[in-house]
Amino acid sequence: MKKVEKKDILKIEDFLWEIPKSFRNNMHVPAWILASEILLDDIMEDRSLNQLVNVACLPGIKKASLVMPDVHEGYGFPIGGVAATSHPTGAISPGGIGYDINCGVRLLSSQLQIEDVKDQLEDLVHELNKEIPTGLGKGGTIRLSQEEMENVLAIGAEWAVEHGYGTLEDLEYIESKGKLADASPKAVSAMAKNRGHDQLGTIGSGNHFVEVSYITEIFDDSIAKTYGLRKGQVTVMIHTGSRGLGHQVATDYIRLMMTAMAKYDVKMPDRELACVPFDSPEGQNYFKAMCAAANYAWCNRQLITWEARNAWARIFGKENGALKLVYDVAHNIAKIETHSINNELQKVIVHRKGATRAFGPGFNELPKKYIDAGQPVIIPGSMGTFSYVLAGTSKSHELTFGSCCHGAGRNLSRTAAKKVVNAPVLKKQLQEIGILVEGSYRGIAEEAPIAYKDIELVVDTVSASGIAKKVAKLRPLGVIKG
Amino acid sequence: MSHLLKHTADVEIEVSGRTLRELFTNSLDAMCDILKEGGCKTISHYDCSMQVVVSADDCTSLLIDFLSEVLSLSNIQKSLFCSVYFSELTENKVEAQLYGIWFDQFDREIKGVTYHEARVKKNDQNNWETHIIFDI
Image (cartoon, rainbow over the protein chains, first blue to last red):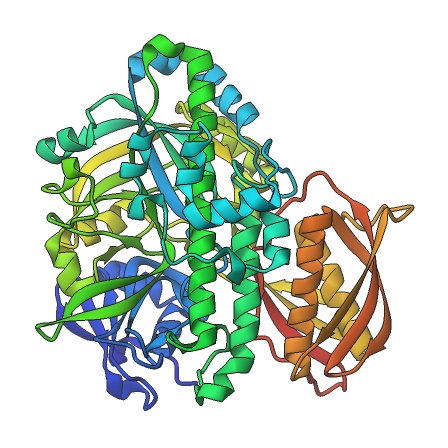
């Protein structure tokens, strides 16, 4: 298949590039790349853009297939990809959401400043590591009965709150209030439920983590104040998803759709882009199962929040306040949303795979407190680099279906990272600059800062393009790796 | 035989075998090694046994679906299935008995065995081969 070269890419405006629809005859729309020229050259090193061109072939895709500046090669969809298909007849593709359904990030703020915690940081990281199960195979402390599992899948984070693992206020600060109403537990296989019955409250492995950070810089005083953020404040960030349950839902439905595609006369250039019409029985069942898995993920992050709050209280005491939920946002999900396309409001199925929703001010679902500021967009860096809190803008609706980047984005394979990184040395070097890391040496090497793009470049790009604005910069203090 | 290839975010392997059985066995070995490096090398006994039956339209789907099934069982049973006996293996159907050892903790979590770039075919040396990308 024809490889994308720089000469095939047109500059549309600063930070926006286009591979025209004419590049390949099966593209329904052009492919757009949101990046600076430096990042674009970097992106061309792997096969991300060819994958982006394949996404432009999805039946019913609208306006353009898009990638964010943190894009890297995935399988089927590139990671960092966004595609909106027409509702209800356009395609839904499990590959456009990924195996880790509703992988996402949640930020908690504390009442303490860096000076208040630095002497007890080691104890805190140790306590968090003890409290929050990490790695594969290690179950959590909660074992769901069949009935409880059905409830978790149906109501998501609400289940956790109903059972004392959070507050009603927490729900306000979660994307979609931590529950997708279209979820149907019946659409989730017994195998998936079996995989998920003991994994609530666990992080898993790979790039998942819990990180203690503090705010080093505020860029927008007014929005930071609205989000309850201030310079020097200590925060806790949680990054994980729907664990084995979500992985199994994706596996089940990709397999099903590969066979079902012929029935709808759909042909895609990559098997991992298997898709069916959204309104077909297979499409509807997948969407209901995906919503259920998304609910499981929100419940999971709520349970981890409860664990983090317990660890925090044991170290600093209840008098130093609980950790407050700033926001929780998904970055592997499909949502039915309304966007303006060719000056006309249209209902679309927005696939975000490694892309964060970034809705601007005025969006009704946002907590009342945030409605004028826009949605918080949480962008984690790697374990040794800064993370960012951004705010969604109205420009993101115009340009990217209300989406933004989701992290720094990898630029080194895991194998390459292991070859160049000496994990014990890295752990010590990070410790010397005040960043404590708990995790296996393999995990530390594979997720080393060198394996990721420069987050400053990524965040500067989204900020300069206008799809999100910088609010706060966070420096890691302690990381628990999955 | 299998070896790792370069992939930015995930783990990609190239795997081959003189027969279909060897290709399936080598692919399973490679997956176990990703889950727990060297985990199958020092075993003296098996803790559990499971049966899998998978059908598919073509050989590529069959291999990926077979590995996905074993991966799901590995997660549920918290076992590494180091050995396999195929009672039936054609290009469209596999029936096998898996033998595994229990593990408290794996090295890596495989989120999915993907179809991306997988294509089971015979090469110039008449060996079966394919690439497989595991979502990590």
